[in-house]
Image (cartoon, rainbow, N blue to C red):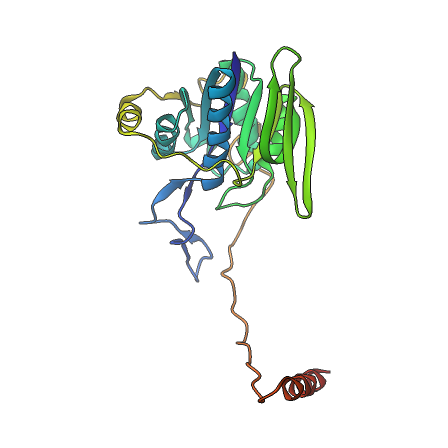
Length: 264
């Protein structure tokens, strides 16, 4: 049986987040938190692999207590086990510190054959977590996976189709393998009522900096985060465009050339 891990994150709904013009900080008050959409695609890929080959799917996230709600969404959608890493000592973590804590906590659960991640998160959008986690798990990495074609548990090989701007690539990798998933073929399922109700009362394992063995406090939270974001700036809108309507294509082109000439 395959042992599968999915790394997820609860993020603020970026469509509703605003920036404080005085401090440059994100105003999160009153903004609903959601499961990162691209992580939902990764979860669907993992659940489909479990259903096809048999196995167990564990989901893990680092965040405040409210992040448990994102884990319950994952349980409703087919995950078997949920782990929440929550501690004030983890606050202000960048991707380096976050990947360290996740990898150390995962050692408590056991070795994994496959690890799935979303391509990036809506709030940070760095796309750094997958490569860092693959390094920490000592796993091979397949990014931009469009479709998992086969998993050979006996030979420890996974084959997948990867998406590129101008085409696709079929690639194989040795397990353990971490994959980032594109949303093309893995649309998140809608849980049925039975699964949703079961997820409301399902146990969620909670680990802190005190319960994860061998955790180096110099590598967690703010002390372990070399990336600092002192301020966030809102997007500045440039001047509006100008429509050219001179009555014909020739006149439009002549007008455009005049405008370009004025800029030189």
